[in-house]
Image 1 (tube, rainbow over the protein chains, first blue to last red):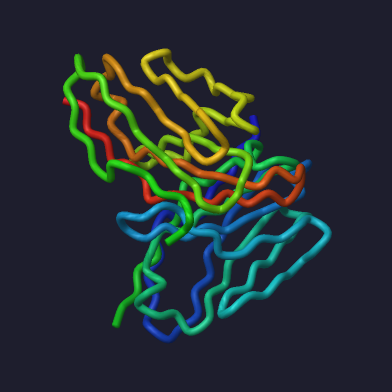
Image 2 (image 1 turned 90 degrees about the vertical axis):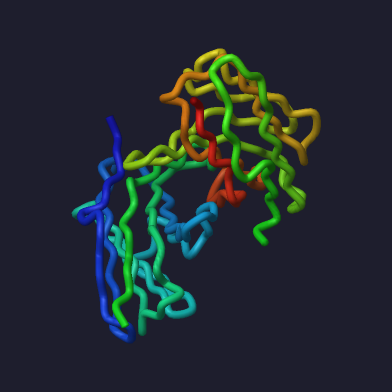
Length: 112
Length: 114
């Protein structure tokens, strides 16, 4: 069946460096992708999304890249800060929100 | 503040207890969801309500009983749970548009079943 997964369960980066979190998806029919951030003790928080007709989308300090050829999604965080420490989830879907399939998550830790 | 409020934040219950989780959204959304988040597992969709009507039950055991009295409130009634039901239960809401729908999550209820 379809699945969304993350290449690495944990990622450690130095404060100030850029972070790249990767996600693979298997459903070629998915046309919508979202990144969520979940801090300890909180629910997932929307970061950025992208539709399948785009390759790249930028937000504030974050960029999402979509490579449909290899079914790969990545989240880039520029100048990583301590507040970026969290678990990051990707999700893929088509149509309504109930069709979203979530990955397992990558834990990002920031080294001072 | 995400606009989705869940209570209680923490709940410990025995297997014979009956308890309820509450969710309220202040975003004017028309769809509400219950998700289960277990350690080392992806988010699992449990129930979906659109305009107060249940539109999805993802093969959830009957010991979990949802209730949606209006578009802003959602409950999850719990009875005779098992220890493996211990998890973080997340409520979410969205505006149904049919495309590009984003889920907005509450902070969850951390449930421990003894």
